[in-house]
Amino acid sequence: MLKLSRVLLSLLLSLLCVAVFGQDHYDHAQSSIDQFQSKGSANLPTDLRYAFRVDAARLSLRAEQDLDNQNARVPSADFNLYYRLLTSIYASDDLAKEIAACGIHSANSISVDYVELIYDKKVSWANPLQEGIASIDHPAVNRLMEKYDLIIQSHRQISPREDAIIIRAAEPLNMSALTNTFYDLEGISKVDLGTNKKLSSDIQISPSDDGWDVHYLLYFEEDGVPQQHIWVYHVNKKWEIKFLSETGAPLIEGLNCR
Image (cartoon, rainbow, N blue to C red; front, side):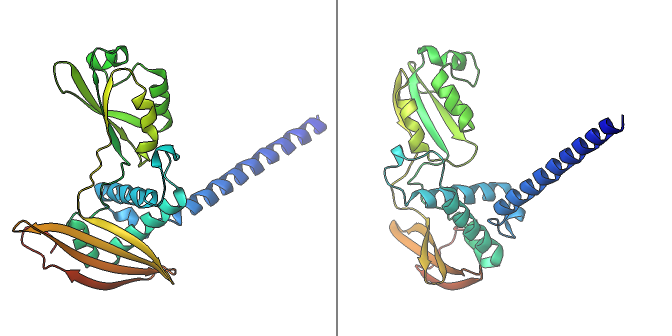
């Protein structure tokens, strides 16, 4: 009986050690994630937090070549760096918050949040959609939707023959890398990633000797003439933030930047 008690005590101690180690491992992993979040990030409005995540994803993917053949996941190291830069600057002063109020974000030249599919509504995989169910009856697409946490956001009629659905990602992804599966679907007539190559407002980040320079470029038109206004911040490797300059065309009324 004494021997059995010792065995049970030993087993309980072992389980306790595993539990403690598991918690320590979790805390360490969470700490590794938290180190990329700026102090002001937790206080960001939900919509702005998501917008900065989209910006960080686009900035990360700009350095990649042939996005169609890259991983659908955005490189995490670059993403975390850019997200921390953007949220840290936003939290640093009132001017940065005014810049955000202007709606300045990364130019939408890379798709990271959604794709629109236009298709023949008579195809069999679209049967659930015709019944009002936000689902596709196709194994490969279903696996993709589950793996990357995609949802069918909307479903609308394009013509008597064609419908369109928008598939949106819960977290920013390299949407170009996901399109091959959609192109292979029967009845697809168009895959639209919603990108825009026209001149628009943008965020550009470049490395410097001791950190990064972050340029906020506001694009607008005055009397039909393209104009641009630019703010520049510097963030050093100690995460000290300094406003450097404000240049460009004078801001006009209606931009809501002040």
